[in-house]
Length: 260
Image 1 (cartoon, rainbow, N blue to C red):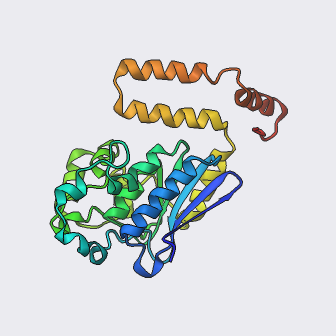
Image 2 (spheres, one colour):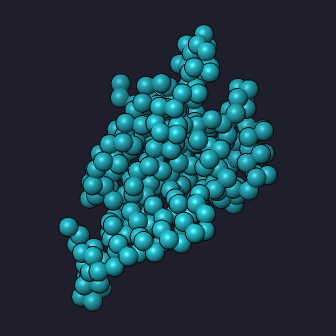
Image 3 (tube, rainbow, N blue to C red):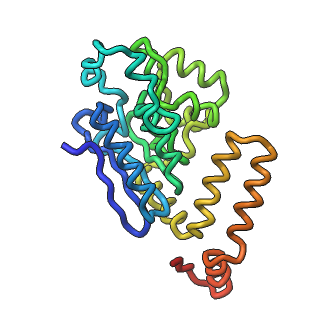
């Protein structure tokens, strides 16, 4: 059975975890399916992405039973090799969404635990239902978050928050996650809200949105001089180009822009 579905409509890519019978728990097959979906979307002409899960929850975390088969393997040989640039394949489950050149919006409901939590923080924006529970769950199994979480979480939350979540594996409600910066906003229907936001973004200049994502990514990790130069370079590549000229024309004519 397919683990992930990808569909496109009005320049929006919808990526859906489809293992609802297992609360979208991540097994090895889903690892590959999520990465493949991210790579497919990255190569498409989508202008925004909505990431969601079928069934009662976004993702319950790692499918511990399916990964039990790895117990006899050398963890050094299994985990340390880099398969996708600077990541192994488990880290790429989250980081592939940062490599997607357009905004990714995660719609969260039910549970968002462990591997699912790290997948969600790989998105640009997270919209959760008020009933959603989130957790850095790895400590429950005597492990630490190792799917890109330690790159992504410090960009969102304070050190003491990350430490408490990591040390305890204690689930928190969506309202607390929002207060701590881990969730962007709450919505009774997070998928509908995510699609509305994706539609709004898809109506903006595609080249400017892509430039903005590149620039924000650099700003989170680069030094002052590099960020300032990148800001100027990205802007110089937008001014007077077809997308910007269409935005200006649409504003002047009080209509929606049409990008080619």
